[in-house]
Structure formats: structure tokens, C-alpha cells
Length: 154
Image (cartoon, rainbow, N blue to C red; front, side, top):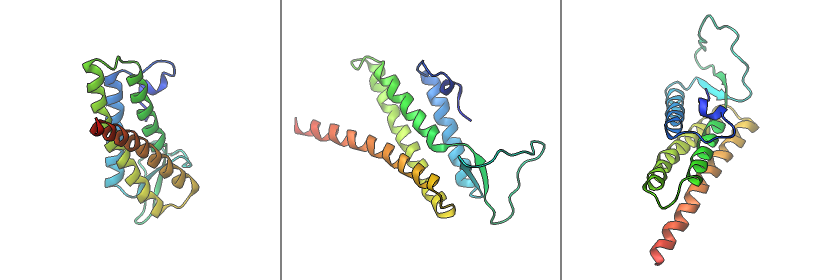
């Protein structure tokens, strides 16, 4: 489910591609929140019956191959990379900093998703993914708190 811009290794995604990828991740998280019988897992096997949709029995968990945390990581990396290539003295840079708030909300949703999944499926992958998402969240909070604190001292 990765967006086209993630397949371009050397160049930076356009703003519209980043917005599109973030929208897709939020849609995926919404679907997973509303359908708790489905879990996206890196260790899941491919669905072999393409002619019909999976229908898990009551209480059964159906694993979909993929990686929510990698998707969130790539979004965060693309936003950071795009900010590094914009002149920080322009209004475009300030506008792009505002995009970080939406990304932070998405990272929180990913954390909530992995916390829920960790109660259903106890594996090392889920714990590692939860730790990765928490680290992404802490990186955003840590740097913002320092910036806010230093501005109040001036």
C-alpha cells in the first residue's frame, strides 16, 4: 500500500504525495480501528484466494501482510527530508512545519493501534514496532519542548 513517492529512493516526495500518503495511512488506521478482527503484520502470509475476500470467523484475527510502522517512518523521514531542502527563511518552510502536527497525530494513532494489537497478539514484532512508534513520538516532543522552552527564556 505504499505510495508512489516511497518507491523513489533518491528524490524527495512532492508535498501532494506526502499528503496523499498520510491520508492513505490515516484511512488504513481508521479501517483497522473499525475492524478489530484485522491486523496488519509483517509476518503475515499473502492471501492466496484473490477471487474472494477474507471473512474471519467470530473472535478470529486475520493478518494482512504489511507494515504500519514502516509507513509512518517513511512519512516522517520524507517530511524531515523535505524540510531540509527548503530555505528556513521562507513562508513555505513555516507552512511545512505546520504539517508536522498532522504527522504527529498520525504517529499517535499508530501508537494506539500497536498498543491495541499488543493485547491481542504478543510477539516480538509488535513490541518492536510499538517501541519504534514511541521513539518517533518522543523525537517530535523532545525537540519541540526544547525549542518552546528556549523561546520562553528569551
